[in-house]
Length: 391
Image (cartoon, rainbow, N blue to C red; front, side, top):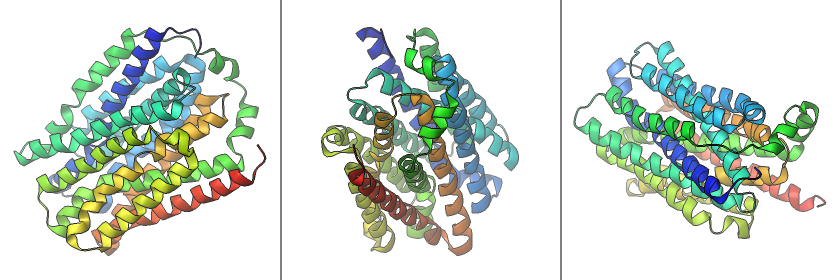
Protein backbone atom coordinates (compact mmCIF):
# COMPACT_ATOMS: atom_id res chain seq x y z
CA UNK A 1 0.00 0.00 0.00
CA UNK A 2 1.61 3.29 -1.07
CA UNK A 3 1.41 7.00 -0.19
CA UNK A 4 -0.33 6.51 3.14
CA UNK A 5 0.51 8.62 6.18
CA UNK A 6 1.60 7.20 9.50
CA UNK A 7 -1.75 8.27 10.99
CA UNK A 8 -3.74 6.30 8.41
CA UNK A 9 -1.43 3.32 8.89
CA UNK A 10 -2.10 3.17 12.62
CA UNK A 11 -5.81 3.95 12.33
CA UNK A 12 -6.20 1.03 9.92
CA UNK A 13 -3.96 -1.19 12.07
CA UNK A 14 -6.18 -0.50 15.09
CA UNK A 15 -9.24 -1.27 12.95
CA UNK A 16 -7.74 -4.58 11.83
CA UNK A 17 -6.86 -5.47 15.42
CA UNK A 18 -10.42 -4.67 16.59
CA UNK A 19 -11.90 -6.66 13.69
CA UNK A 20 -9.85 -9.67 14.75
CA UNK A 21 -11.16 -9.26 18.30
CA UNK A 22 -14.71 -9.42 16.87
CA UNK A 23 -13.65 -12.36 14.68
CA UNK A 24 -12.32 -14.37 17.62
CA UNK A 25 -15.35 -13.61 19.79
CA UNK A 26 -17.90 -14.44 17.08
CA UNK A 27 -16.12 -17.60 15.97
CA UNK A 28 -15.65 -19.11 19.40
CA UNK A 29 -19.08 -18.71 20.88
CA UNK A 30 -20.04 -21.91 19.06
CA UNK A 31 -18.03 -24.29 21.26
CA UNK A 32 -19.53 -23.19 24.60
CA UNK A 33 -23.11 -23.11 23.31
CA UNK A 34 -22.85 -26.42 21.42
CA UNK A 35 -23.87 -28.70 24.35
CA UNK A 36 -26.85 -26.44 25.14
CA UNK A 37 -27.88 -26.37 21.46
CA UNK A 38 -27.66 -30.17 21.14
CA UNK A 39 -29.75 -30.66 24.29
CA UNK A 40 -32.30 -27.98 23.44
CA UNK A 41 -32.94 -29.16 19.88
CA UNK A 42 -32.31 -32.89 20.52
CA UNK A 43 -29.51 -33.17 17.94
CA UNK A 44 -26.81 -35.86 17.92
CA UNK A 45 -23.06 -35.27 17.52
CA UNK A 46 -23.13 -35.85 13.77
CA UNK A 47 -25.86 -33.28 13.24
CA UNK A 48 -24.04 -30.82 15.51
CA UNK A 49 -20.86 -31.35 13.51
CA UNK A 50 -22.75 -30.83 10.26
CA UNK A 51 -24.15 -27.49 11.50
CA UNK A 52 -20.63 -26.43 12.46
CA UNK A 53 -19.49 -27.49 8.98
CA UNK A 54 -21.57 -24.65 7.55
CA UNK A 55 -19.38 -22.00 9.13
CA UNK A 56 -16.31 -23.31 7.35
CA UNK A 57 -18.06 -23.79 4.02
CA UNK A 58 -18.91 -20.10 4.23
CA UNK A 59 -15.34 -19.31 5.26
CA UNK A 60 -14.00 -21.18 2.23
CA UNK A 61 -16.42 -19.44 -0.11
CA UNK A 62 -15.31 -16.06 1.23
CA UNK A 63 -11.57 -16.66 1.06
CA UNK A 64 -11.88 -18.13 -2.43
CA UNK A 65 -13.70 -15.07 -3.79
CA UNK A 66 -12.81 -12.05 -1.66
CA UNK A 67 -9.13 -12.08 -2.63
CA UNK A 68 -10.22 -11.18 -6.15
CA UNK A 69 -12.74 -8.64 -4.80
CA UNK A 70 -10.00 -7.02 -2.70
CA UNK A 71 -7.66 -6.84 -5.69
CA UNK A 72 -10.42 -5.37 -7.88
CA UNK A 73 -12.32 -3.05 -5.51
CA UNK A 74 -10.19 -2.66 -2.40
CA UNK A 75 -10.18 -4.01 1.13
CA UNK A 76 -12.74 -1.57 2.52
CA UNK A 77 -15.53 -3.28 0.54
CA UNK A 78 -14.41 -6.69 1.81
CA UNK A 79 -14.38 -5.60 5.46
CA UNK A 80 -17.82 -3.94 5.33
CA UNK A 81 -19.19 -6.99 3.51
CA UNK A 82 -17.77 -9.10 6.36
CA UNK A 83 -19.80 -7.20 8.95
CA UNK A 84 -23.04 -7.41 6.97
CA UNK A 85 -22.64 -11.16 6.50
CA UNK A 86 -21.93 -11.64 10.22
CA UNK A 87 -25.13 -9.79 11.13
CA UNK A 88 -27.21 -11.95 8.77
CA UNK A 89 -25.62 -15.09 10.22
CA UNK A 90 -26.16 -14.16 13.87
CA UNK A 91 -29.79 -13.14 13.31
CA UNK A 92 -30.54 -16.39 11.45
CA UNK A 93 -28.68 -18.64 13.89
CA UNK A 94 -30.48 -17.14 16.90
CA UNK A 95 -33.90 -17.36 15.22
CA UNK A 96 -34.19 -20.72 13.43
CA UNK A 97 -34.42 -24.29 14.76
CA UNK A 98 -34.35 -26.43 11.59
CA UNK A 99 -30.91 -27.98 10.96
CA UNK A 100 -30.78 -26.75 7.34
CA UNK A 101 -31.57 -23.15 8.30
CA UNK A 102 -29.09 -23.24 11.17
CA UNK A 103 -26.43 -24.54 8.78
CA UNK A 104 -27.21 -21.78 6.26
CA UNK A 105 -26.97 -19.19 9.04
CA UNK A 106 -23.61 -20.64 10.05
CA UNK A 107 -22.55 -20.34 6.40
CA UNK A 108 -23.24 -16.59 6.50
CA UNK A 109 -21.25 -16.35 9.72
CA UNK A 110 -18.40 -18.24 8.08
CA UNK A 111 -18.51 -16.01 5.01
CA UNK A 112 -18.15 -12.94 7.20
CA UNK A 113 -15.24 -14.49 9.09
CA UNK A 114 -13.54 -15.44 5.83
CA UNK A 115 -13.83 -11.84 4.63
CA UNK A 116 -12.25 -10.66 7.88
CA UNK A 117 -9.47 -13.26 7.61
CA UNK A 118 -8.52 -12.18 4.11
CA UNK A 119 -9.19 -8.47 4.48
CA UNK A 120 -7.34 -7.93 7.75
CA UNK A 121 -4.34 -10.12 6.93
CA UNK A 122 -3.89 -8.49 3.52
CA UNK A 123 -4.27 -5.06 5.11
CA UNK A 124 -1.51 -5.76 7.66
CA UNK A 125 0.77 -7.24 4.97
CA UNK A 126 0.36 -4.04 2.92
CA UNK A 127 0.76 -1.67 5.86
CA UNK A 128 3.72 -3.39 7.55
CA UNK A 129 5.69 -5.13 4.81
CA UNK A 130 9.05 -4.89 6.63
CA UNK A 131 7.99 -6.81 9.76
CA UNK A 132 4.76 -8.49 8.72
CA UNK A 133 5.43 -11.62 10.81
CA UNK A 134 5.44 -9.59 14.02
CA UNK A 135 2.33 -7.55 13.20
CA UNK A 136 0.38 -10.56 11.92
CA UNK A 137 1.05 -12.34 15.21
CA UNK A 138 0.14 -9.21 17.19
CA UNK A 139 -3.12 -8.92 15.24
CA UNK A 140 -3.79 -12.57 15.95
CA UNK A 141 -3.32 -11.80 19.67
CA UNK A 142 -6.60 -9.90 19.41
CA UNK A 143 -8.28 -12.94 17.88
CA UNK A 144 -7.03 -14.86 20.90
CA UNK A 145 -8.37 -12.20 23.26
CA UNK A 146 -11.83 -12.36 21.67
CA UNK A 147 -11.65 -16.14 21.69
CA UNK A 148 -10.74 -16.14 25.39
CA UNK A 149 -13.54 -13.74 26.33
CA UNK A 150 -16.19 -15.69 24.39
CA UNK A 151 -16.31 -18.89 26.53
CA UNK A 152 -16.08 -16.92 29.80
CA UNK A 153 -18.97 -14.74 28.70
CA UNK A 154 -20.98 -17.71 27.37
CA UNK A 155 -20.27 -19.89 30.40
CA UNK A 156 -21.37 -17.11 32.78
CA UNK A 157 -24.68 -16.60 30.97
CA UNK A 158 -25.36 -20.31 30.38
CA UNK A 159 -24.74 -21.06 34.06
CA UNK A 160 -27.48 -18.56 34.92
CA UNK A 161 -29.90 -20.44 32.61
CA UNK A 162 -29.73 -17.87 29.82
CA UNK A 163 -30.76 -19.26 26.42
CA UNK A 164 -27.93 -20.10 24.03
CA UNK A 165 -29.74 -17.93 21.48
CA UNK A 166 -29.51 -14.87 23.73
CA UNK A 167 -25.83 -15.59 24.35
CA UNK A 168 -25.08 -15.40 20.63
CA UNK A 169 -27.48 -12.51 19.94
CA UNK A 170 -25.40 -10.01 21.95
CA UNK A 171 -22.64 -10.49 19.38
CA UNK A 172 -24.52 -8.04 17.16
CA UNK A 173 -23.21 -5.07 19.21
CA UNK A 174 -19.45 -5.40 18.48
CA UNK A 175 -20.19 -6.37 14.86
CA UNK A 176 -22.17 -3.14 14.35
CA UNK A 177 -19.32 -1.09 15.88
CA UNK A 178 -16.85 -2.75 13.51
CA UNK A 179 -18.98 -1.91 10.45
CA UNK A 180 -19.27 1.72 11.59
CA UNK A 181 -15.50 2.01 12.09
CA UNK A 182 -14.58 0.73 8.63
CA UNK A 183 -17.36 2.76 6.98
CA UNK A 184 -15.92 5.99 8.41
CA UNK A 185 -12.19 5.35 7.95
CA UNK A 186 -10.61 6.32 4.61
CA UNK A 187 -8.57 3.58 2.93
CA UNK A 188 -5.61 4.55 0.73
CA UNK A 189 -5.40 2.98 -2.71
CA UNK A 190 -3.46 -0.26 -3.16
CA UNK A 191 -1.81 0.37 -6.49
CA UNK A 192 0.11 -2.93 -6.57
CA UNK A 193 -3.06 -4.97 -6.22
CA UNK A 194 -4.78 -2.99 -8.97
CA UNK A 195 -1.97 -3.51 -11.46
CA UNK A 196 -1.96 -7.29 -11.08
CA UNK A 197 -5.59 -8.05 -10.53
CA UNK A 198 -6.45 -9.61 -13.90
CA UNK A 199 -3.28 -11.63 -14.54
CA UNK A 200 -4.94 -14.99 -13.91
CA UNK A 201 -2.43 -16.93 -16.03
CA UNK A 202 0.48 -15.82 -13.85
CA UNK A 203 -1.63 -16.28 -10.74
CA UNK A 204 -2.35 -19.91 -11.65
CA UNK A 205 1.33 -20.63 -12.25
CA UNK A 206 2.47 -19.01 -9.01
CA UNK A 207 -0.32 -20.41 -6.82
CA UNK A 208 0.25 -24.11 -7.49
CA UNK A 209 3.99 -24.62 -7.16
CA UNK A 210 5.14 -27.61 -5.05
CA UNK A 211 6.07 -25.22 -2.25
CA UNK A 212 2.67 -23.51 -2.12
CA UNK A 213 0.83 -26.83 -2.34
CA UNK A 214 2.80 -27.81 0.76
CA UNK A 215 1.67 -24.65 2.52
CA UNK A 216 -1.94 -25.33 1.48
CA UNK A 217 -1.80 -28.84 2.97
CA UNK A 218 -0.11 -27.59 6.14
CA UNK A 219 -2.66 -24.87 6.84
CA UNK A 220 -5.53 -27.29 6.12
CA UNK A 221 -4.28 -29.79 8.68
CA UNK A 222 -3.34 -27.12 11.23
CA UNK A 223 -6.78 -25.48 11.14
CA UNK A 224 -8.41 -28.93 11.43
CA UNK A 225 -6.39 -29.38 14.63
CA UNK A 226 -7.16 -26.01 16.22
CA UNK A 227 -10.84 -25.86 15.29
CA UNK A 228 -11.36 -29.52 16.15
CA UNK A 229 -10.08 -28.79 19.66
CA UNK A 230 -11.96 -25.50 20.04
CA UNK A 231 -15.27 -26.92 18.84
CA UNK A 232 -15.30 -30.11 20.94
CA UNK A 233 -13.12 -29.61 24.04
CA UNK A 234 -16.10 -28.45 26.13
CA UNK A 235 -18.11 -31.56 25.25
CA UNK A 236 -15.02 -33.79 25.68
CA UNK A 237 -14.26 -32.50 29.18
CA UNK A 238 -17.89 -32.70 30.28
CA UNK A 239 -18.43 -36.26 29.04
CA UNK A 240 -14.97 -37.79 29.66
CA UNK A 241 -13.97 -36.08 32.91
CA UNK A 242 -17.38 -35.04 34.26
CA UNK A 243 -16.51 -31.36 34.35
CA UNK A 244 -19.21 -28.75 34.91
CA UNK A 245 -20.23 -26.08 32.39
CA UNK A 246 -18.08 -23.52 34.19
CA UNK A 247 -15.02 -25.79 34.37
CA UNK A 248 -15.19 -26.88 30.73
CA UNK A 249 -15.84 -23.39 29.34
CA UNK A 250 -12.99 -22.04 31.47
CA UNK A 251 -10.73 -24.68 29.90
CA UNK A 252 -11.74 -23.40 26.46
CA UNK A 253 -11.10 -19.85 27.63
CA UNK A 254 -7.66 -20.94 28.85
CA UNK A 255 -7.01 -22.52 25.44
CA UNK A 256 -7.62 -19.20 23.71
CA UNK A 257 -5.88 -17.23 26.44
CA UNK A 258 -2.75 -19.28 25.82
CA UNK A 259 -3.16 -18.79 22.07
CA UNK A 260 -3.20 -15.04 22.75
CA UNK A 261 -0.14 -15.27 25.01
CA UNK A 262 1.70 -17.51 22.56
CA UNK A 263 1.15 -15.10 19.68
CA UNK A 264 2.40 -12.19 21.75
CA UNK A 265 5.53 -14.10 22.77
CA UNK A 266 5.96 -15.51 19.27
CA UNK A 267 5.86 -12.05 17.68
CA UNK A 268 9.31 -11.39 19.18
CA UNK A 269 11.10 -14.43 17.78
CA UNK A 270 9.48 -15.70 14.55
CA UNK A 271 11.43 -13.23 12.40
CA UNK A 272 14.76 -14.20 14.01
CA UNK A 273 14.23 -17.94 14.40
CA UNK A 274 12.75 -18.40 10.92
CA UNK A 275 9.15 -18.97 9.89
CA UNK A 276 9.24 -22.71 9.13
CA UNK A 277 11.48 -23.62 12.06
CA UNK A 278 9.16 -21.71 14.39
CA UNK A 279 6.13 -23.52 12.98
CA UNK A 280 7.71 -26.99 13.27
CA UNK A 281 8.69 -26.41 16.90
CA UNK A 282 5.18 -25.13 17.67
CA UNK A 283 3.38 -28.08 16.04
CA UNK A 284 5.50 -30.66 17.86
CA UNK A 285 4.91 -28.90 21.19
CA UNK A 286 1.15 -28.84 20.57
CA UNK A 287 1.11 -32.55 19.65
CA UNK A 288 2.92 -33.41 22.88
CA UNK A 289 0.32 -31.48 24.90
CA UNK A 290 -2.61 -33.11 23.08
CA UNK A 291 -1.18 -36.63 23.47
CA UNK A 292 -0.53 -36.25 27.21
CA UNK A 293 -3.88 -34.54 27.79
CA UNK A 294 -5.73 -37.30 25.97
CA UNK A 295 -3.96 -40.42 27.21
CA UNK A 296 -2.39 -39.32 30.51
CA UNK A 297 -4.08 -39.21 33.92
CA UNK A 298 -7.16 -37.04 34.34
CA UNK A 299 -5.30 -34.26 36.13
CA UNK A 300 -3.11 -33.78 33.05
CA UNK A 301 -6.15 -32.99 30.89
CA UNK A 302 -5.12 -29.37 31.59
CA UNK A 303 -2.50 -29.86 28.88
CA UNK A 304 -5.26 -29.97 26.26
CA UNK A 305 -5.91 -26.22 26.56
CA UNK A 306 -2.13 -25.87 27.05
CA UNK A 307 -1.71 -26.88 23.41
CA UNK A 308 -3.05 -23.45 22.50
CA UNK A 309 0.26 -21.83 23.50
CA UNK A 310 2.07 -23.80 20.79
CA UNK A 311 -0.67 -23.70 18.16
CA UNK A 312 -0.81 -19.91 18.50
CA UNK A 313 1.83 -18.78 16.03
CA UNK A 314 1.16 -21.27 13.23
CA UNK A 315 -1.56 -19.52 11.19
CA UNK A 316 -0.09 -15.98 11.17
CA UNK A 317 3.42 -17.31 10.58
CA UNK A 318 2.33 -19.42 7.60
CA UNK A 319 0.62 -16.28 6.28
CA UNK A 320 3.81 -14.26 6.70
CA UNK A 321 5.91 -16.96 5.03
CA UNK A 322 3.62 -17.17 1.99
CA UNK A 323 3.22 -13.40 1.58
CA UNK A 324 6.98 -12.97 1.89
CA UNK A 325 7.49 -15.10 -1.22
CA UNK A 326 4.57 -13.71 -3.26
CA UNK A 327 4.66 -9.94 -3.61
CA UNK A 328 2.26 -9.81 -6.59
CA UNK A 329 -1.43 -10.73 -6.40
CA UNK A 330 -0.94 -11.04 -2.64
CA UNK A 331 -4.67 -10.76 -1.88
CA UNK A 332 -5.53 -13.55 -4.29
CA UNK A 333 -2.69 -15.83 -3.12
CA UNK A 334 -3.69 -15.30 0.50
CA UNK A 335 -7.31 -15.92 -0.47
CA UNK A 336 -6.37 -19.34 -1.81
CA UNK A 337 -4.29 -20.06 1.30
CA UNK A 338 -7.17 -19.16 3.61
CA UNK A 339 -9.56 -21.22 1.49
CA UNK A 340 -7.51 -24.28 2.33
CA UNK A 341 -7.56 -23.13 5.94
CA UNK A 342 -11.33 -23.07 5.71
CA UNK A 343 -11.24 -26.61 4.32
CA UNK A 344 -9.41 -27.62 7.48
CA UNK A 345 -12.16 -25.97 9.51
CA UNK A 346 -14.68 -28.11 7.65
CA UNK A 347 -12.73 -31.33 8.08
CA UNK A 348 -11.77 -30.91 11.73
CA UNK A 349 -15.01 -30.47 13.72
CA UNK A 350 -17.07 -32.51 11.23
CA UNK A 351 -14.82 -35.59 11.36
CA UNK A 352 -14.49 -35.32 15.13
CA UNK A 353 -18.30 -35.34 15.37
CA UNK A 354 -18.66 -38.33 13.03
CA UNK A 355 -15.90 -40.29 14.79
CA UNK A 356 -17.40 -39.48 18.20
CA UNK A 357 -20.71 -41.04 17.17
CA UNK A 358 -18.86 -44.13 15.96
CA UNK A 359 -16.40 -44.68 18.80
CA UNK A 360 -17.15 -42.19 21.56
CA UNK A 361 -16.02 -38.63 22.21
CA UNK A 362 -12.48 -39.63 23.26
CA UNK A 363 -11.96 -41.56 20.05
CA UNK A 364 -13.27 -38.66 17.99
CA UNK A 365 -11.27 -36.05 19.87
CA UNK A 366 -8.05 -38.02 19.31
CA UNK A 367 -8.29 -37.18 15.60
CA UNK A 368 -6.93 -33.75 16.55
CA UNK A 369 -3.63 -35.41 17.44
CA UNK A 370 -3.56 -37.11 14.04
CA UNK A 371 -4.15 -33.78 12.29
CA UNK A 372 -1.33 -32.20 14.31
CA UNK A 373 1.17 -34.94 13.50
CA UNK A 374 0.35 -34.68 9.80
CA UNK A 375 0.90 -30.90 9.99
CA UNK A 376 4.36 -31.47 11.49
CA UNK A 377 5.20 -33.90 8.69
CA UNK A 378 4.28 -31.40 5.95
CA UNK A 379 6.23 -28.57 7.62
CA UNK A 380 9.30 -30.81 7.94
CA UNK A 381 9.07 -31.63 4.21
CA UNK A 382 8.73 -27.91 3.39
CA UNK A 383 11.75 -27.09 5.52
CA UNK A 384 13.83 -29.73 3.73
CA UNK A 385 12.51 -28.56 0.35
CA UNK A 386 13.49 -24.93 1.01
CA UNK A 387 16.91 -25.85 2.38
CA UNK A 388 17.64 -27.93 -0.76
CA UNK A 389 16.32 -25.34 -3.23
CA UNK A 390 18.51 -22.66 -4.84
CA UNK A 391 17.88 -19.12 -3.57
